[in-house]
Image (cartoon, rainbow, N blue to C red):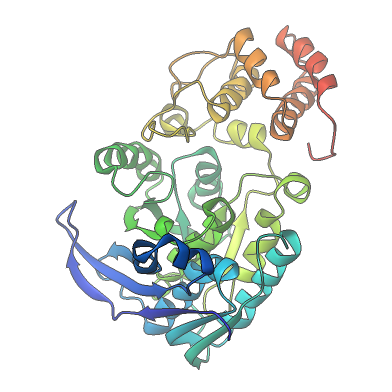
Length: 391
């Protein structure tokens, strides 16, 4: 008998955000995961945990349609179903193209990770023809380098006449900042708002517990963000996903950034990956004339450091390294400059990502003709890293 994951979307309701006290539209759904053998072995507590209530709180007036909610339900439950079920059934309405495109996404991940994912059959009670969304773009915005670069491209003074403008930036409590870290998220939100306000783009708060769904968030985060942006389709016509790799890097290191957005997009709500044309150094240079970005970028994902840059983790160290080359020293977003000891720490990591970032540094340093003695040390260190052709 096939194992079935059931999703019951609830009608959207307007309520009060328990943290901010402001009105919100709450999108919620109950997911029931099928039992597995180890669930029986682990007892009733695990049996009960197979039923989860997932919720998303949006600004009041967002008013997503039933089909938009159903489409989001497919995406937020997909990765759990790929692990735990043969069938994913949404007990509600979806747009006609959502199920086949999500099936293709599951097939892509099955080819990538056959040890981890299967391709479930996707079903819904009703499938309705897509109504093409119209309007400006919405951008998930963390205040990091990738999203800052995309915001500047789509909302900055250099935006081309054919570029769909970003009208809304969306910061998610429950994505990189845990949903229960209320005060830290508030500080991170205020920091990000310096950037969005400087370009006249409103920053809205979305709160969710989607990370509690049965999934690998590293694999599913682009899919979850696409689901969230699609809930704004009544007023927006495009969801932008700021990605962290160039096209070449993504193919060698993280193909999801190139391939997945193609299958997250539907006629009802297009989704576009942005940023493949620039590496991390080039993105930092691109925002170099934007004082608010240099002062308030938040690139750190170290657990427990949710609202600032620790200047100690790999992500902080690599941006500090690039700042030394691009600007000759530290930028205000970091509490200190990059040192030779910091380079030793990056080299000691000895993984492929370290190699990518160090090769980027060396390539751009050569192009700039940099006389920084750090360049020779980086080039000597690169002999320890195999070149997979991604940088």
